[in-house]
Length: 303
Image 1 (spheres, rainbow, N blue to C red):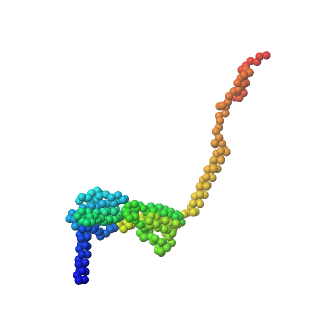
Image 2 (tube, rainbow, N blue to C red):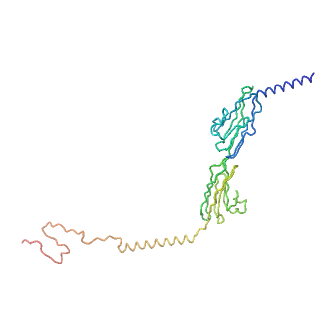
Image 3 (cartoon, one colour):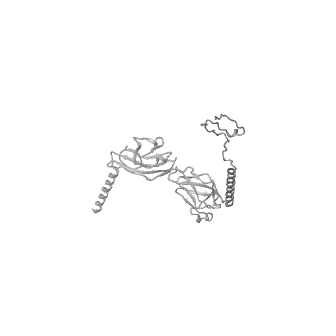
């Protein structure tokens, strides 16, 4: 009797389970966080585990910056995925020729009006990885020995953001120069996040070709090598040059002084050109200096 009761109870539990399963739409996905590289294809799986409605309503929505928009509605692909996506039965969304703008959340929604539980959904986070393009590298052409120098490398297209690495004469530079005998005497730091290579004091051995590589999970790209020259400062030449310049300045100053002493810079005035005879207010004519040699009376004396 007890065995018969237990069997009946088991049958009842199974019937209830089958009833719930049959009359409830239940979805699942094989990957909630898929990723793919740009220009590749991806499947956003939306699998129906149980359903009793023959023709359920299937919809896909894209959620970008918190704003949802239809991707698949009334059995048609719409918006920016038109001609680049299709539905793989029963409800999986396949996107081809991925672009960086496809990075977003995607929600699969299934509505079954004949089921006891009429609605279910799955949320998928898609990441489209973008390979770096050729980075922009900035390397100074010539720097004196002992002086600091900054080499820069930047890239703006990659997603996720790339890490940077520098090469000297085609050999990868160690992150810590003390860890590699070839760079142990160098004094530099590499910032892998910003792409900056900073020397605190250059040596002659630091001369050579430098190039940078930007790399992320989608791939890498390198810039063209550029030459950095580290040169010695010619102290003797600088001193001789300063002495020569001082000598030239001294010669110019002496020449100016001599010219001033000899009156080359004094403006001569023409003698007599500005002479003006005094007024003859007393009836007498005054003799100009040039007439002194031939004295003549020009007025009569009244006695």
